[in-house]
Image 1 (cartoon, rainbow, N blue to C red):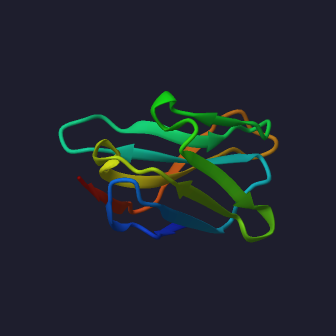
Image 2: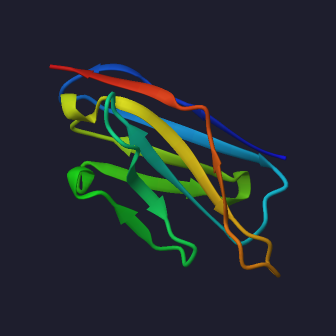
Length: 121
């Protein structure tokens, strides 16, 4: 059983900052990658930032230079520092864990419950 618990969302004015956290617990294989996605009303869920299985990072073009993903491997926790927030960043932010058994080939996705980020203009 895997659980992802997010925290840190809220309401902020444009230009402000927020920091999201996601703690993973349960049976977590060493072959994994974590990241952040978001979904705005009426839109599809999209990648915000993630660690790849190889340990590099990917960012959506819309957040490059403003957001930074980081992690604490010992705690199975990732963070998303969001600076210079814009109204268009308003969305529910979801933590994602992709994981596969070291001897397997199938990746499974796990999702947190989501945390609301609202940026007022």
